[in-house]
Image (cartoon, rainbow, N blue to C red; front, side, top):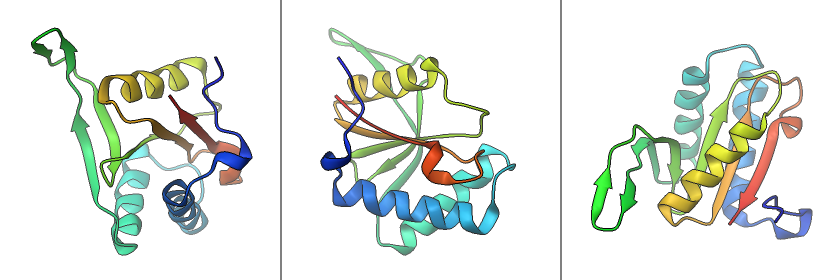
Length: 130
C-alpha cells in the first residue's frame, strides 16, 4: 500500500503548514539544527492562528496499558496533523516508517515529513496518510 498523497489529495491545513515551512526555509536556509527549525516553524504556525503542540509524548497502547516508549511527535497541529522535522541528506525509509507509526499510534490520519536540509524545500516534503 502506498501511503503518499497524490497531488490531488492536498488539504487546506497541510497547504498552510507547508507555506509556513517554506517561509522558515526562505529566511533561514538549510544547514541549521532541527531544533532551530522547530522553534521557528512553531512561531510561524502560531502567527497563522494554528494550535501547535511541540514534542508531544505518544504512548504505545497495549490493551489497557499505556507504555511510555519515548515516542515524541515533533509538532501536532490543530490536533489533526502530525509534522516530523528532519535535517538530513535524504529521507530514508526509516523516516517514513517513523511517521506512519506515529499516525497509527495516535489515530491521526495525515502527516508531513519536512526536511529542511535541502536547497529547495519542495524537494524535502512528504505528505503521508493512513
